[in-house]
Length: 117
Image 1 (cartoon, rainbow, N blue to C red):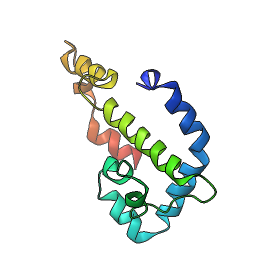
Image 2 (tube, rainbow, N blue to C red):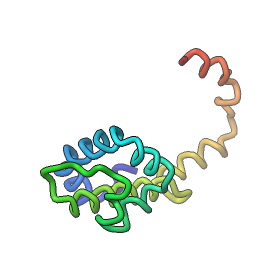
Image 3 (cartoon, one colour):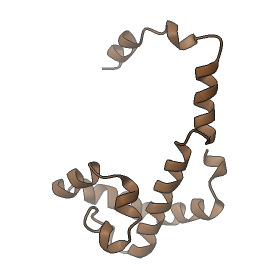
């Protein structure tokens, strides 16, 4: 799915990455905004403009906030596209589900997950 992401988006993310990380950390330090953002669909937060986004996120300093929010919206949209049935990821899941051999049926999931704790 990453291969189908536009080069423009990849460049935007690369340029805004420090601001994105700072936003994530600053938001995590604000309990109210963390709770509010975790209970709201990401596109609702980031794709309705800067004035909406500041209600959910503690935006990074020293970056153009409009560009930051637009970049985060574009990332969110790309992720949503990747989760659709007709996406590359969705097609891969469909292929695994329709396979004749059920390799995953033999996995002892409870034991595996319990071993990760």
